Length: 209
Image (cartoon, rainbow, N blue to C red):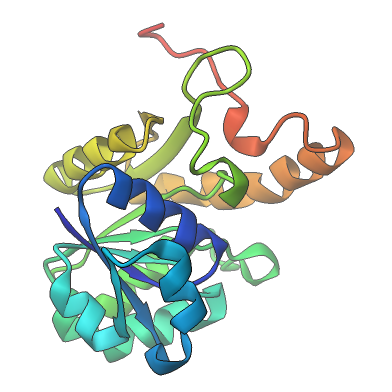
């Protein structure tokens, strides 16, 4: 698939490398692509850093990996390009969690407007595990995701699997608020355990085993 990743941080780098290794096309988006020569060298010659508009245009799936405060303005500015594309919001609100009980990704969908196909995913996954999808027990780590579009969820599930992780469907987009709220706890646990249990290595028991 053609994947656009908006952002050039650790999460963007890890996801991009993983999908490039799986054979996907990856375009990164940056506000100042001309300054990202070191990042370009890190992720490899098989990808390219564009401006946000160029990256969105190049992608069938768009992953938003910029700081949370920038997400809604970015989504609103490029709403015409994002509309009807699969948009995966991986950002975490932390102290900026919406006070009305909604998930951050729901605000992203609102910013895009009619035709938004927003999913929330990778919120509890640390960048250090993105290229290490199998935990110390030999089992794949989980990636929890939520969304309202069944076809978009199927695509995302496949992309998660391509990274070597186990996709776990947590229900509709409104359920993503629980993913948002769990992240500070996972970070605290990881720090308390001195990194021995990265958040994405926590696995749960599901009805299908």
